Every structure is written in structure tokens, then in C-alpha cells.
Amino acid sequence: MSSTVLLCPPAPSQASLRDAFVALVGTQAWAGRLRDISRRAECGTRIAQLLRQRHAIELTIDRLPFGPMTPRPLPAAQRLSELIGAVVALERRLPPAGRCRLAEAIQAGLTGDGTLVPIFHLVRIAELQEQRGFSVHFAGLCEGEPFDLLLSRGGITAEVACDVVSADTGRDVQRAAWHDFADRIEPAMQSWLARHDGGYLLRITLPSGLREGAEEATGSPSPHSLHSRVRRMLERGCRRDDDAAGVLRLDPLPGALIRSGGQALLAGLRQEFGPEVHLCVTMGGDGKGAFAVAARAGRANEVGAAVCRRMASLPPTRLTGTRPGILAMLVEDIDRAEWRSLLERLEMEVEARRFLVGAAARAVVAVSCASRFELLGLARDSSPEGELRFRNASHPAARLPALAPAVLSPV
Image (cartoon, rainbow, N blue to C red):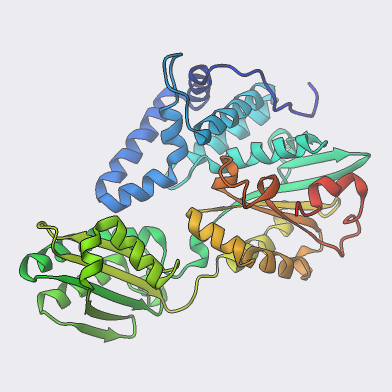
């Protein structure tokens, strides 16, 4: 078998692709994963929404068309079908040891908070590099190398390490913790509206952030403790409650915002407070009252810096240093507006270039950054060629013509 794995198999039906992928996973394991997602989604409405976003790939795979009468899928589902086909084709071409490693990686993605994004990120990066004229070998799967892919072109080889990092590592108020708190506080908000007319806005500033189960170690409140504090405040009818862990202030909500309704109210608050604020809204039963919560951390998010800290940790363990190295990063747990904001503010570019001039990037000839939106073909307008790409100009291989398609910026 050739050491290069072809990622362009014939195009079978989506039904057969789904069946082949589920067979690769194991029918019982797949069904068990879907039950687990459903069970965890029972914790609350907002947590369920977050889980549907995080596990959208698994849920979309389960809904793929089964026959010719099924309507044409959305572009993201169509792209996902192509990636599924690539994974299935890859598994069939790997040696036995490679198949075992692939099975282990898929199983990790179907356990706990894991997702299938790392696997699809891997095959997508391989696909992109093949399209750029490189021969691609899955060295991580085939031989257990610390890097994932070995690229070859014009007599030059380069190592690629693919990695997924959560945007939550750069946020003090983390998404799961916020959604947990918002679900917990819903009954207290409804109770307040039953006793008070009009609209109310609870402003929360959290100097140390909000995290699941980290209160004792970090000093930041947990969703449970913040919920208890807000509930006591509302039960006493207080309008302000301050301490080192958080500043809470209850203000009137303008009538025009109340009359606009739930989604319009959220949009208006988002426009007023900016992209980094965390929001939840409850409307009164008569439609005449509303209770909104707007929370923010004590400092701005540092998603770009967090991604680059992750980059700095990779070369010692993921690259051998004997060949030019490329880090292919995918940022998870981020919505479209926040990702676009990062790109428009050049935050990812500034942080990536700061990393590349440091000692930790000595073995790195280039880095690329993408999100789930590029993975599923939904962000080509903001990310030419499906990724941001930055070259380490000081690397000896940075100007080699053979590596240019993989290292030069697409803009």
C-alpha cells in the first residue's frame, strides 16, 4: 500500500456514507452516544442549546438523508458528508495499526465532552494540502509519529501537527458555566415577574469570571453559588449586591425594549453591551414584562492569546524538529459573530505573529487557524482558502518554493 492516503473516493449516497461511518464507530456505541447527548440535554433549555451546538456534527450525521426522496441537504450537511466519506476512505486504506489508532481517536471524540471535530479537522487539513499539490502521508496514524501528517513536494518534506483548542480557554466567563447559571436562574426570574410589573435588567460584573466547579481554586463563583446569591437578592427585593466575587445591580429595562419581544430584546441588548457580554432573557406570561441578565467578566476575552499559548506548548511534543513544522489550529466553542470579530480586529494575526517571533516557534515554519465554520465550508468570505495562514519569516525553509502553497498567506 502506498504511504500516501488518497482522500478523493467516489461519491456514494449520503445514506451509505452514514451507514459506513456508523459501522466504523459501532452501532451500539453510536446509539449510546446519541442517548448520552439527549440525557445531558435534559439539564436545561439553554444547556440543551449549547449541547446541540457542540455536538452538531454527531446530530447532523444521524439526520443525513436515507433515500432519493429526501430534500437536498444544507451546504454544511453536504460538506459534512464529504468529510465522512474521507474518514471512511481513510480507514479502509490504513494499515492495521493505523486503523486501531483511528478507532481510538474516534472513540475519544464520542466520549464525555469530546467531539468528532479533531478527526474531521485532520482529514480536512490533509485534503487542503493535497489540493495544493502535496503528497500527504498520515504518519501519526500509520507509524504513531507525534505529528499528524507528513507533506512532500519537490523533494521537500514538512510535518503538520493538527490541534483543536477551545475558545473558552481565553474567556473568564465560560460558556457552559454561563448556560448552567442561566437555566438555574430562570425560575427566580419568573417569580420576580409574577410579583412586579415592567421590565428589569440585572447587570452582573464578575472580576474573577464564572467557571464550573472552580470556585475554591480560583475564587470565581460557580453557577450554583452565583444562582444562590442572585436568588437571595431577588427574594429580599434588593437592587444591589456587591462583593469581591461579583457586582450585581438591578435596573429598569426600557419599555421599548420590552415591547420588542424576546429575540429583538436580545439583539438590542447585544448592540448596547457588545459581543463579549453574556445575555439571557425571560418574558412575562402576559408579554408585558421582561427580565434580562447581562453578565461580563472583569477583563476582555483573550481568545487569540489563549490559542497562541496552546501553539507554544505544541512544538516540544508534537514536532520532531528535524523538518519544517506546521501547526494547523482549529478554534472551537466560538460562535460566528465572535469569530468574525476576531478576524476583523486582526486579533488572531497579531497573536500568531507574536508567537512566530518567539523561541517556542523555532521549529515552526507556519501556522494556520480556522474554526468550525471553515471546517464546514461556511466562512470562505472571511477566510480565503478556508484558513488564516502565517509564515515564520525567520525559519530557514520559509522561502522554499516547494513549501510556498502551505506557508504563504492566502491574502
